Length: 193
Image (cartoon, one colour):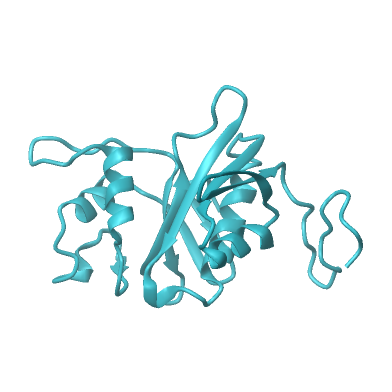
């Protein structure tokens, strides 16, 4: 496993390359989901409007004369068994001078509520807080997005503050490693399970 490819039990988290960004930003994946490079296929519902907006921010607008520039923090979430891209995640600009990075994530509608989001965010957060160089991660979630709030809580984020309709979560440092057969890892200061 390398920094540009993270693997979980069911998923690959692959760095977005310029050819992949171009394929998404050029559009037409609804008509031809096999247009993605490297044998990847767009799953139904992907890319979302948020995906396209995020890639434009990370890579800039794509036109025929300009190749998009690589962005280290944008990743696609790929089902390892099918090669389908079901979502995306990453950080918004990487760690700042104090080591804090904001993350964002999203799944195509048909791929939600199957544990893929939890699996992907957990792996990305572990990488970001280790080899990725961040000391803490933050994420903004709308207060009424209960599923996303619970996802963050499952992977070790806690509420940091609330601003209007947004709840900001934070995770500081990596969680203890989970060994096969070991009891669930405990957050520092948390009561035993």
